[in-house]
Amino acid sequence: MKQFQVPQFITVEDKVIGPLTIKQSVFVLGGIGIIFVAYRVFIPFIFFPIAAFVGGLAAALAFLKINDVPFPTLVKNGFLYAMRPHVYIWKKEDQKKQKALLTKELSGLTINKTPKLSESKLSDLAWSLNIKEKYREPENTEEQSNK
Image (tube, rainbow, N blue to C red; front, side):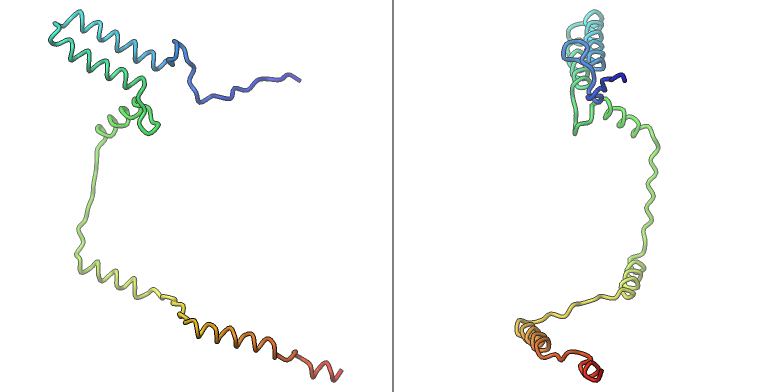
């Protein structure tokens, strides 16, 4: 029978370029490419803010995780949240009606309270149980003696 080796770390992405995964290397190389194009097109006064923004965004997309969620996933979720329609419905109810409903619901409930025993009552109860156990007559003694 042939034996096959089963991969154990299937949730870990493969490192392709040095310590970077494929996604990380695409983000870093894309950021470097955009910065290079901006260097060729813009004057230094405009280039440096653009380079700082693009470099920071590329580094965040490649390496940043917030609560163990990758930054690209957060960006995607934020974009989808902003694009989808939001419908919030709130109906203000009259406070008197709310109070009436609450009292109606509470009146139907039965509250089981356990009686509180003081220490003396508890000891009296324990003593009476002990006495009854000691002096209790065996049941059916008359019937057993008649047979």
